[in-house]
Amino acid sequence: MHEPSATALLQRVDALERQARRSRALSLGLGTLLAVVSLGAWITPPGTADVLRARTLIIEDERGRDRVVIGAPMPSGMGTTRISPSTGIMINDTAGHERFALGLQETGQMSMGFDAAPGNGDPRNPERLNLGVDVNGNGFVRYLDKGTGLAGYLGLRPDNRVWLEFLQVSADSVIRRRVGLQGDQMVREAR
Image (cartoon, rainbow, N blue to C red):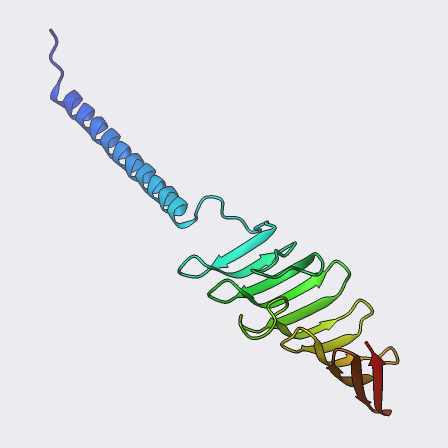
């Protein structure tokens, strides 16, 4: 058998040491890459996108109650029915009753409604204040009484003048008083 010389042994040891250093460097590099990829996946949840598409988004409070609803179309709130399909935002109280809504109706009317708390008037329509722009581009503010009747109206007339109207509704008549720059007007109508 042939014994390797000391020089040959030293060369082999040097080669093995170089190979071990390269293997350690490669392992360290691959381990670092794996750590970065794993950390990136942990920080960025799967499915994160620049655009979120949905028909309805519901924001719940800490008890799981629907508090803010954004929809296209908007669902009706508890105990209410929309007068027409609309796209908008609704804010509910802790019991789930709609208290505020902002919506664009299919007719083109844009309005914002503020509702009374349950128990404060006729439950068929808790809305008390409504601001909006009708399909003809006229701005308005409507005040509803606790019986769901129209009590007051501030609006833009077809002649581009603003007028204020107060209403008194009884079983047999409707009295309207209109106030504007062109004077006051009192109108009585049989019901």
